[in-house]
Length: 315
Image 1 (cartoon, rainbow, N blue to C red):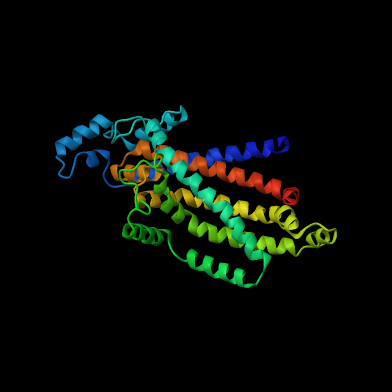
Image 2 (tube, rainbow, N blue to C red):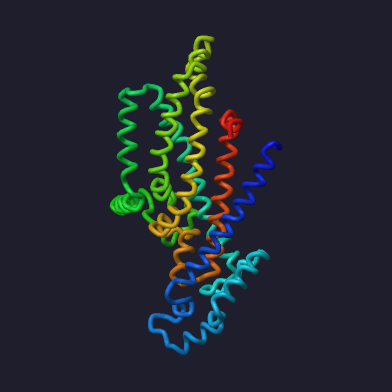
């Protein structure tokens, strides 16, 4: 592990720069949006004088460049500020929203990874066989369905079958009733399972056809041991990189899925902050999403270096 420390340090510095760039981009894009938090807080029929008072109270009457510099300085000191819409510290809002999102992400990965491995290995065992053809057709069909369309179908089905699964999380705490996460997890995991399982299948087929696997079988090592102990680690190396890209995609998918199923997580908080032009909350959410993406990609690269050390030597 210690031999990876210089590389990890460089990756963390690069990740910090990428995170800062994301937050700056969010700042600039939010400033470019029409209207501001004062207009959003003034109600449906805003009075110009009321809007002016709110803008002054929130400090929105100052030049945009001055506000951006103040926010950048505050972020450098670890101060995420106060929500313009809720009047509460952004840190508290993010902490409250992070738990449902983290639970949703953990549940999705808990389903995604073992199911992808199981389907990929099962398909590779009998390449071209009936099971392989069935699974290939099924994954292709599921992968062609957009997440939003799949979510609408599942919500409709749950509504038609009352008592089976809650269709949304309206009025329900996901931490107290995890059953509300079943449908969101299915939506988030459906397409990535198709991609990862096919990638693992291809890697397993190559690994099982290698001279190394043939030699292990001739030495009397069981086929199951060769498959799971020798072939699978090599097949997981490219899958680990794809899993990192999948986690990046999940960060965006969470926004859509949480809005669709009314889950009170980071995605819903971000959507509400955009509607309210709540710049401090948007900055905090962008910071969390960017930091998670950096750490996930770093972990995936470390996993690849452990699973495929020959690639590391050649890099």
